[in-house]
Image (cartoon, rainbow, N blue to C red; front, side, top):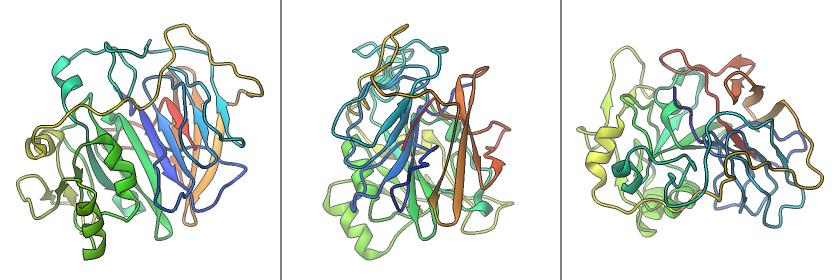
Length: 299
């Protein structure tokens, strides 16, 4: 089963016990966040605030000016990956489908309220950003190298989202937003797909609004139009290439509070070579029975 390549989460404050999460977004207010990547092991980090990068299959190598950043590289195992024209840009995994490698990335806002769980489709994402909003968190889920038959629940856009999505070059799919935020998204040239497009986003029976709006990657790509492949998420380490910079300590568990109303923990699972996530003290399960488990985590 494929796993999300990266998961990032935005935290309201810098934290010493920064831990788990999903891949980091560049928020407008430079809010620290968590980020995780699941398929390739990353080489470099770019973000202007302190972060932790957990690299699992293709390892990350440190870079930039993050003086407080720590990186963790468990024993290498799992999917080999190298950086180059033969790999997917967001994961570092060797290309299996040239058509997918050439297409643009699509990003979609996903609810992370307790009433929205279990979510659908996150295990097929390349990168997931977790951002702080209104006391809880939401996900910006990025698809490129894999597809998902059901994705959701889809929620509204927030002011920091353009800073995450614009560098990817593709559209942002969301339920709606305030006029001011919609103007921000429009002004930076991001294509918007909202619930007004009822062919792309549909209400689902059996779930209460607003946690019942869903889509598919096929529907999102059908609306996305023509676009270029995203830039590389990061350089990736090659097969068998270890990440061992000075001052790095190996760990097997991380925990933090990405928002006042949310706790998150990641436990390294050597059997599956992923960081299994728990949210609010419970395993973060997805539709279909998979537990959310990125291969890399960046805080």
